[in-house]
Image (cartoon, protein in one colour):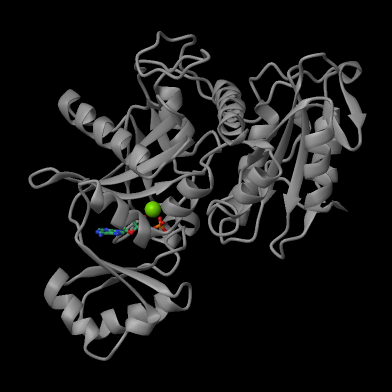
Length: 418
Ligand SMILES: Nc1ncnc2c1ncn2[C@@H]1O[C@H](COP(=O)(O)OP(=O)(O)O)[C@@H](O)[C@H]1O
Ligand SMILES: [Mg+2]
């Protein structure tokens, strides 16, 4: 899944999601739109006397505080994005409401208390670096989970992890078994959205619009397949590993030979492959926040700087442009928001997601490309930009996600109790 931060031009406000107990699509605004950056504009305080360093964590002493465990780093290609996102989230979190434990996961999968981040946070949120170091004192996941369950406070885990082994239901399953509340989609929603082949099949079953495609495992690859796919889907076409992100392994194949090579290349990342017709259209993104009655943001638009929105375009060349809001007519906005809600529900999403579309203006309209259940989350990422343009502030987004995590956890437990 792509969780790339993009350069964005944010303007205008729209209907705002409320920070009420229930999500709403038409609740009145509780704040005005404003950009957020490090140093934070949150209510976090740098008054050392208001902070405590206990068990290596930081936060204010208060009867009703929440213990927020921020998981970041991880083993996927999007490790770095996660470390940057975590720095911004920590800087924006209101330490009078949360005790914060940043837990880093190295690219090798080792968990640690992020000691440098903890020390910096204790000196004040403005002391945080722009990227958190995920290393520190080793920490077994079971220790973290045990403390979360047995501790005196309500604990919420914020898994700021992108891609495989983080956004795909694995971490979510561990947290579910431990009965720890966590931000974002559950096991099924995370796994479905992560696997592009399964997501496509679910969206097809729900009758939702998307590019024509074929999905197949490695064992079905045979010499005649590329020509067959080219005849069926046309050239050029797009070849992708089913489970990846950041455009890694994605190729725009212009010939049958290139299609054959692209399949081989994608197979180095996953054993399931997706081949899609190439869509000629604009790239539109929409942010969603909520559980049963989610809020759908104003849409944004990505204008790739490359032939398509490639890895280099996202991370190396910085040539793409993000526009928030997207220049669309009110009817087009209504259309894409309605499809977004249907997609979010079909894929059993929860908490948050960024739904990405192609827009064939003269053709089929909005076609769903993919859903990211943990999108990039720095203040310049599309996900917060679209919610900020819809009337939320960056700290409010975090507060809302924590509320949603607690709500969902309470419901899950009610469902499983005998
Ligand atoms: N079917 C398609 N038609 C046109 N462009 C596509 C298609 N599929 C992917 N792309 C281009 O490739 C980019 C990355 O593909 P995507 O499926 O979003 O993978 P990732 O999960 O790695 O972001 C898209 O943002 C878009 O620019
Ligand atoms: Mg993408």
